[in-house]
Length: 127
Image 1 (cartoon, rainbow, N blue to C red):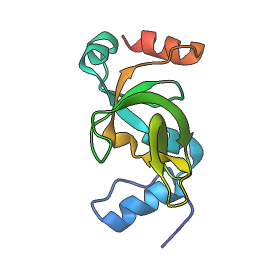
Image 2: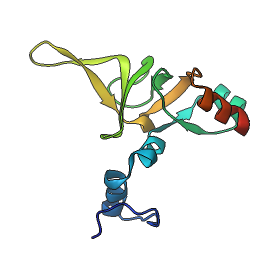
Image 3: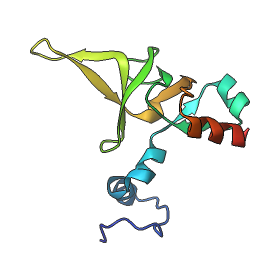
Image 4: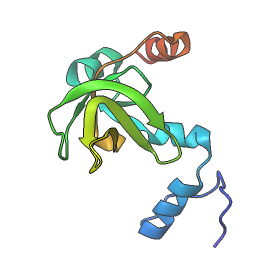
């Protein structure tokens, strides 16, 4: 099977091809894959369901061990397609605390960081 990414690839129901698309995607496509749903008030304000996450966005965890916790996005890992959130840490056997990687589909954006002029302009254009 061809490994190099192609923009002509179509969606597939097969899990192996879904994984292939994600693993071989270039960085500009991976950024879009790191999207999370917006809270209801933001959804009405910006007239869109989801947005790609950025460092500084305030999010709420919807699933997993840390369900219900809030925090700011402190790091976005495009290679692993995961997000690290402030205040969400796990203690290792050695006693060291490390940030937990969370899938963006398990997050809800509560407040956007609009310091980036391009992001702010893109949101205004859509609304």
